[in-house]
Length: 358
Image (cartoon, rainbow, N blue to C red; front, side, top):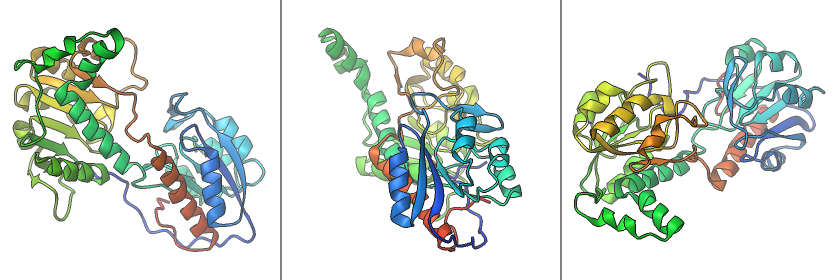
């Protein structure tokens, strides 16, 4: 079972130095702006940068040909790369076999995210195209957002806000009654599934709150903030607040289902700001209906955008739902551009790449 927050790097052969300005396509979007990428690349090395803006996040990502979580923009990418561009820097561009076949001059792809799921790695490797990524660029932002979701779910903050701000109603004061009041983090047993870049930061913050932090991650090495628990079942039985921080793999898909939720103490709270398919949403709804889970906060979903007929909407009084905003900070966009540009600079100077997968 794989819980690491970022894909493991593999040693890369020393790339060839580029003579003269590097010919780059900065295929950004409405978050990691093309101008941010272009400015960062030019700071690293002289470059001829062509900017292309994709529609994400106002246009949702999805599967494109054989890759995942990409903007549907193969034609636009092929056109932008069409005059022998050597380097592509992108966050959501679909780097498919078709795009690679149409771009014989392409030698380096740098993805401004923690995992290049929008790149056909096998096709890139077979064409001698280096693929790099930007590990940790949103770890701090996602950790902060996760703790915010915890507080919102534990203390019913959105449910108290909506009637007061929307209708001028003081009915949220009912959450001050004993039977409806929430839990606090101090002394609360909190279980974290996964201890990578995000999970480890969440653990440090929770320890500062005085929570009883427990961690299950069979791949975590060295000291951790909190108590290391040897099995997922043990963690579930002891956690009044459960927070997911594992990467989505074939092994972790559906990691938390009906059986696992039933192991939680009655009235537990569940938070998922990692990947939606880690959690069985149908099982969560059943646990909310039975009272096994008293509240939950989700930032990610099995299908995004969340379908209008999702049963999750039926539990608005106990759910906090946000549209995959965990990594949405300006610092993340700027950091992603800098990390990606640094790889372009290393490649252009003939240095070894820091975060290369092919």
